[in-house]
Length: 268
Length: 315
View 1: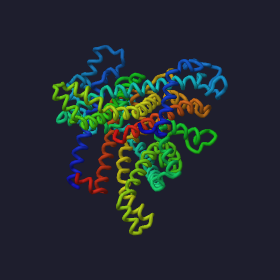
View 2: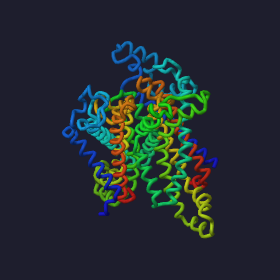
View 3: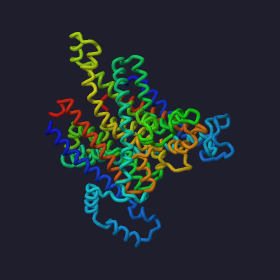
View 4: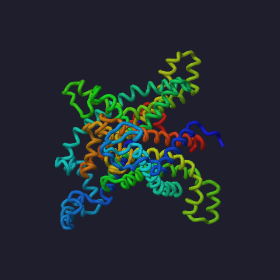
């Protein structure tokens, strides 16, 4: 094993903190995320409210902790959806090659030439704004990029000896793709996945900020920032708290992804 | 070069057709037809069918697609459902405003990012390089609505008021007023872009500086300034053009968020309005325009690249 780089170490630490806190959020939050203390609106940080309160007197620390859960759920969920659709498409295109590959890749390239936020906006217009639809929209926007990565990794191993041996044994297409090729294209997929989770969280937060994702009163960083806008000159805390949490989390995912790529070797 | 241009031109037409198909499919295949959106959830089935027939939604999909493409090409862009106005007249001004904003951002990016990237590449491993690399890392990671609101908080607050909190002013209202409205949204857009371009310039220039022909230039006694400006930058900046073109795609998404933050009346805000009101005729034209601009910008960047680097043309 190569020594772990500072990039990977810092990234892992931030991610571990973020995931740990999100999982434990319901137990470590001092208040319920939607509990209103109507006499204590837009308060500064104090011993009672460690990070202050928002415009309804809700505890910002509790909302930020629970918001991490939402962000993680959306980021991971959207990328899993993208993988579920993109991996079979990429494997199929790379494995079968020829006409099928060309046709699939044409569509994939066209989707890639389409700014992904616009694709998400189209899907949300058709489906309506909600947390689940934001997840679907971002997941679908991730499909072409994932398919492309998986296809090029597949091309690199499809003529490898272990694949040819399995084919000579008489294995079917499905086994060759998922039993032989897939395990061998996992490293680049893992790296791609971590970086994509960070970006998916960012996209989800953007949609919620635009009012097109998570809906009130649920706790979500993008939505918290949206609601904080109006009061930003009265109290900066409702903006700063989720903003810092979001930025730090995305820095963590980026550091982790970059570090992991270097750690697994430049080819991934 | 002519053959290269023709080949790229053919592929851009294919891309534009595919983009229009994606938009059409997204709108017509997903649940919730346009007629349901207009009449609301509680419309009677008879009313829905009548409206669908009036709008031609009962025709086969390929026919509907052909009809839509013909309308778009002949300038019949339909009416916005929410604004009760022709889409053409709604879009024109917004497109101009967004183009102004994007152009301002790009000018700032080129003027700031390329010198910064060059400085980082020349002082690789030094303190300046480390500072620039760290700053770009943070810049890429902070969402633009956070930076935008942060700038708003610091520079447009009631106690400071250096800039307006949002909106847009025509140049006829005075150049200074016009510029003051542009500064914060443009600055917000540039932070992520600067980070991308700095990274690319730094690594592109660093690669070139390590190449044999630069050693030759140094050995023949050229000054460091001449080596960098005349020999290294010309090749080292080539990939930066591609990054700038790809960043236009980011810019198209970025304007949506940034225009919302600063209440800037451009294409981005128009699209959000269309989504919120489920105004499909307006949204599909906006998305088609923005996606086409992006595709054409990539095409222009490819041509520029091929013109600057003859090696590309013969691939």
